[in-house]
Structure formats: C-alpha cells, structure tokens
Amino acid sequence: MERIFKRIALTGGPGGGKSTLISELLQDHFWSDQIVALPEAISLMSGIGISLQERLFQRVMVSFQIALEDSLSNALIDSSINAFVCHRGSLDPLAYWLARGWLYADFFTFTKTNLEAHYRRYDAVIHLVTAADGAIEHYSCWPESHRKEDVEDAVRLDGLLYEVWHNHPFYYRIDNQGRYWEDKSLVARTILSGLLRENKARV
Image (cartoon, rainbow, N blue to C red; front, side, top):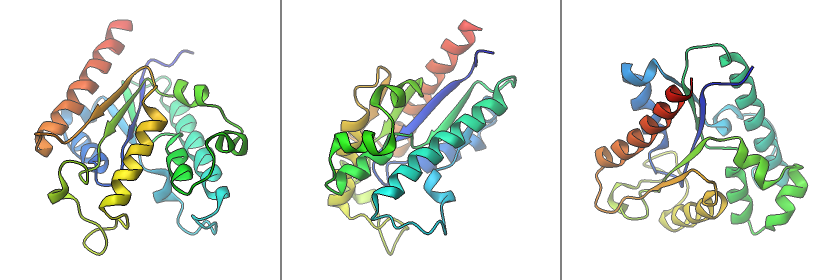
C-alpha cells in the first residue's frame, strides 16, 4: 500500500530550535492531530557502549535512524496521520563524520548507503540554522545547557549539515537574520502547512 503521509527531516546545528519546534507542534491541537514526531536517535542510544569517537558509532546511528523511521512508517500506513517529523535525518551523521576529518566517500562505503537513497527517504528537509549563527545572544552551551559545542563548533556543524542536505529537491533553510524565534517557528509551520496541503490534494 502506498504511504499517504509525508516524511520530513528537521536538521541544523545545535541550538537551532528543532526540539522547541517539535514540542510546540505536539502541544498544538491543530498539529498534534496531523503529525507525529520521531525523537533524535542519539537520545535513545545511551549505554550502547560504542564511543562517539569511533566510525562505527556513525554507522550505527545511520542504521538505527533508518530502522526507527521504517518501523514508524509501517505502523502509520493505514492511519489518519498526515506527516511525521524526524528530529534529524539519516544523513545527519555524515556531517559529524566530516567534522572529524574523515572522507566524504568513505562514509557511504562504510555505511553501505548512497546519497540518493538518503534523499529519497524524505519528502522535505527543513534546516533550522543554529542560533550561534545570527542570534548568538540566544545560544547557550555547557554548563548552561546540554550542548557541548561552543559557538565556533556549532556554526561549523551547521555549515556541514548544509553541505550534506542542500541538494535535496525540497530543502528549506531557515536562518536567524532579522527573526525572533516566533518568526522562525512561523516560517517552519508555513512550510509544513504547504506540505500537508499537497498531501491532502493528492488523497
């Protein structure tokens, strides 16, 4: 049976608003009746016993992300849900791979995947730019928050995530220039609304 819901990846460097946006959507009855959210895979990986410094960790992350998404897709196949939003996508580990200085092509060899397959997984990718880039006064890191990336690291990761995702045919980048969070959230919701309208028109 063809799935009739959208799969959307939220990406972006630390402190971009991914968790906040998902929380807001799920607390809003208009959205909570239409979407479900997949939490960040790494949040479910506590105690796995593989160091973040190892290449194997990123391969496990890719595999785990894909498995979680596919399980959710199968469970939703005949539901009334219109979309599910993923806190990061299956290609996000590539940005962390590159941040460690490992080669781009080696990622696909090591994970036994390819760029096109990752892109096909998502109907759209929404990139929420880290607050460290353009809204630095709103960026916090350890010990004020759980983030250990300083401003420079956060901006670098955000740039790598742009490199990884920007060729997706439905890629939307939402920066912080001239925006308060309410404005940034509204842009994301407008994009999501358009995607859901397309879905309803197809049904």
